Image 1 (tube, rainbow, N blue to C red):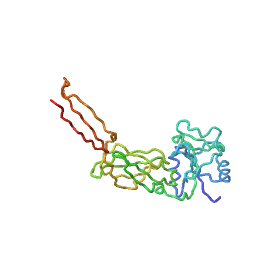
Image 2: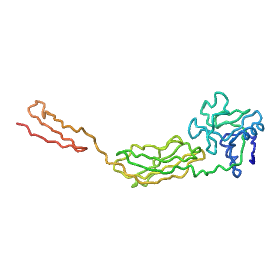
Image 3: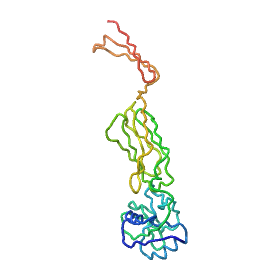
Length: 259
């Protein structure tokens, strides 16, 4: 086991502990890959709580290590993880894993590792936008295999004729791959892009594209209707309206009544 570890005895939050680990080249919160590594850290850690590189920030209940490998179900203390009070970070104590609030202050274990990817690699790919109605555009993308860092996405959009600020839709969940933006103007061309929101901040927008919403059409019944309406309160004069419906266009044939 040719790996370097550091025990951080100064208690701090999970995020601050991770930042301290990352301040060293190749440093990260510890990932336990096998039984030998588990036995080593359990023997070295004693009976106090130690932050591990374990979390479910991206998708609730999907526990993963910071190298984006999945955490199996072994090693949890009975009843854990229970997510009591938004507990999204994992610590190790006396050989068992527990979930807890990431803001809590614990000692931590750092490890030098090669995760095999950079933060930029978690950006979505194959970003596409499709107009689905006069007021809606659907955004879709392929989620990165390294999405353990991703907690959600942001979709920015504005009419291409506008020079004002972009409007932004916030999409929750790192595993989300589709979202429909509603309330848009019909027959209007929009500029759109998607950015990943990660535990380290927002990444750059990707998939910049221009898409035009569809023409807004009023859907009417296909059958003809006929109504006789009084023109005055004495009901001596009438107008008969016959409506012919074709798609979104309505034609009226007016028949002038007898005097």
